[in-house]
Length: 492
RNA sequence: CGGGAUGUAGCGUAGCCCGGUUAUCGCGCCUGGUUUGGGACCAGGAGGUCGCAAGUUCGAAUCUUGCCAUCCCGACCA
Image (tube, rainbow, N blue to C red; front, side, top):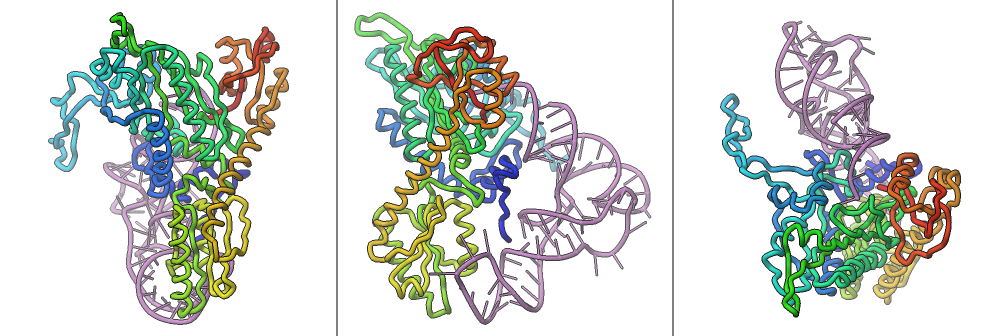
């Protein structure tokens, strides 16, 4: 009956899987590498979408929707991008099934129904979108073009993990076109800021903004900016990316505009995205051995009220009082669930809602009503307090705020404690193995050195932090001169 | 995609090596009752293509082969 959770110390990966499945966020499906997002997990995603969507619109973007299928000829137009994704594409080759003549209960692919041109299932939508933009953009008056789409994409991953890396996942992808390079770069950075703000303020996960090295850059981009977060096992996780695409896609898809002087030029592009992977980040940044811990600002349910009955006659009294509290909380915009299901007892509910990470639990029994109080328990610290029913709702609103702050501060302290400088190779390797987290070290700037470090240690350069301080030093591996430190980590 | 492991009711499992009645147990579920401040108790009951498919055999959860899915390690990956 008790849902036993693996502890983080015993097996971190298993702990994560347990939380996702037993916490009711998602399930495995019959399709390799694909998950079913369950209502509780999807409600979380919807709350994330709602805030992000609002932020995109505030920064001038509009939503649109482009097809799932990309004709192969379009897909291959931007060579670097196509090459980067080629190994993980799902491809549609036929458009019809027919009854197997040898077995009437089976269907087979109809060999007569082969497509003239294969369709690629989008691993990302640059190709189909830039092909479309060609028809939308003629003049500088059509710019900037600021479009976002919420969609699913497919990347045929060999090794998958719920939320962190699945063959199909949900995301948003912004695709913008601009008249000048400066404006496109500004857009790239602006959207990175939007992501950082969202992840820090709503998900309560601190991030480091930075730029990727050439090796780690998005295929087809000039620059890839990213936000990097740190998980409790000391591994880094890329939480979002924003790309400055230069004129690469404009040239590949021949998207030109005339400026005020009637001279033709290719437009400048950006693209940026975050995915359901963020849910994985959320889980691994905050949760504990008792279960999930949801940040109040995006929690599917912020408050749960559990009645503690004592005899039949107590039910109507408690229900009435609870419903009063529900009404007051709702009036202040708090999402609240009153669980008066009599099939499970209070203790069971307490454990269940802790597993699900609901930020605040209110327990209410006759004893409390006599004293005009309720028992309020916060998920992040498990602290319990008796609080007066008079003026309870505003107190809970404040508490939700405190919890949001507290889990952010906790994650921030953890993260900051795990950004360590290494000044020698031995120190670097030792830190990676014994402490984990981000290691700030000098690097000679070459792809070869980066590659060698990765081979030796599995650590990659997560990013070159924005506004990085410049200082002279020598590369941790090659000993060659370096002008700044970069952040290394083992990563998801 | 390579190596290893796993798959028996919603969940966790026994049985498998050494083939042989009606597939074990706990939780959950249903009915009734007693209960309710940290995963309640009593009584009765329902629930199974033993992952899927072929093969060996008089007989397969058990042996063989193929396939599917999951987990771990590796390669790969924005």
